[in-house]
Length: 184
Image (cartoon, rainbow, N blue to C red):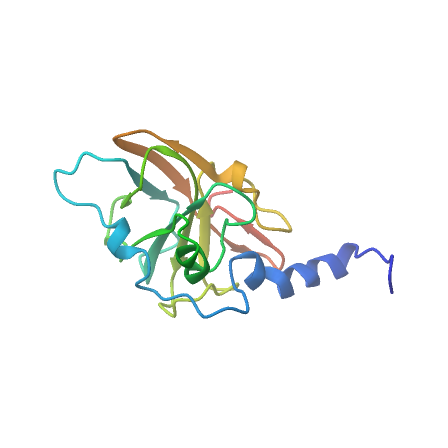
């Protein structure tokens, strides 16, 4: 009914049903796993603006790690890649298989120095979709994850003209309704 508030258990169920939307699923064309990779690929001895991201707290070494760069505003953050590219907005992607041991690092080139919103997905089952019960997610700034997607401002990084280093702590489903780092 109009005006009713969703509380308690109903709010948790609503979050589970909305999670794909919160993490970028829309009614548009499906994201292309190769989109943004050519633009985002770091090159040896290149000095231009780029992010070097260290993924911390991986649950395991399965699957892929997928780093994505978005404009730093709530409307464009986690938007479908084809929409951003068609609108000539920033979208970059880097993807690696986690190394067998040690820290996983991903490098992604940026169009220029500036502020960008950053997400990191641990696609453990390699299906190229966010699986609520399987995959992990992290963001620049390492915000505590709540009932909705984080605000772009809280997951943004100010990248300089050279290589900017950041660390992202991964979050995995814990219990029925929460995402947290493994070591909490």
